[in-house]
Amino acid sequence: MKTEEKPHILIVDGMALLFRSFFATYAMGHFFPNDKGIPTNGVQGFARHTMTAMSLFKPTHMAVCWDMGAHTFRNDLYDGYKANRPAPPEELVPQFDMARDVSELIGWKNYGEKGMEADDYIGSMVKAWEGKADITIVSGDKDLLQLLRPGVRIALIKKGYSEYNIYTEEIFFEEYGITPLQYIDFKAFTGDTADGYPGVKGIGPKTALAFIKEYGSIDGVLEALAELTPARRKRVEEGMDMLHLSRQLAEIHCNLPVAQEIEEMNLPVYDTNLQAQLETFGYSLIVRHAHSLSK
View 1: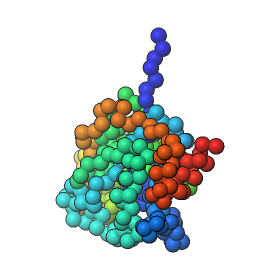
View 2: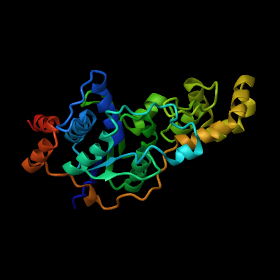
View 3: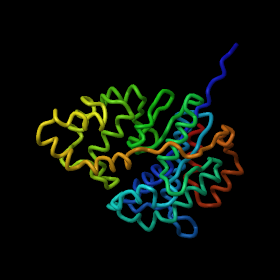
View 4: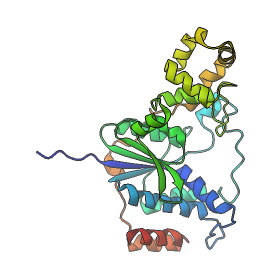
């Protein structure tokens, strides 16, 4: 009897692709405004990235995950979370809603949860579909590496639309020498300058990695404080509160209610009617890109 193949879900980090696409042309002042004068460079780049990912990874199903507003529970935990990030350029602001609208127009299912980040929804999808589907996540965010497990790979954008650094659980271990789940504790020690939390002052990536390799976890390090050099012990003791807080901030939450019906994530049909609608909205670059992929 033939074993039924698992579905292959492509999960796209919509916000990561939108930001990357916007800033790829922002410096040159290329905004590709529509007939209303509204910039579309980020939106069209996001759609082109996603179409290319579909062509490369050949999923049977797909989902696009988004941040649902700037404020999340992590801001409630720590005032400084992402506080160092500048406000988005005015040319990008209208494209947040436009990107979700284009995703919906094309037929890609959008997902997100208010007060949570796209990462949390992606993590929840991974947990919900673990063992039931193979999963490829497309993003530019290394934080997602903690989600690696059997049947899950993460494609981090490297260059252009088609070059990725692809991670599996095995590749991650070869590079870091720790497990994906241990990566959370590693981030707790080092902090994250992009997200605005400091970790433990004076503990850099090299020391943090040595800690996790030697002692396995934050708890393991704390149990072995007496074994550390006086300088390192002092840094850990003085940074204890921030260490535990940083771990809360670093960990992706995987318990959100998510789509349970695979049919929700069916691939759309890209036909002449859809092409005409995209042209009407001024998204000719998306149409041309789709044509180039079909050749």
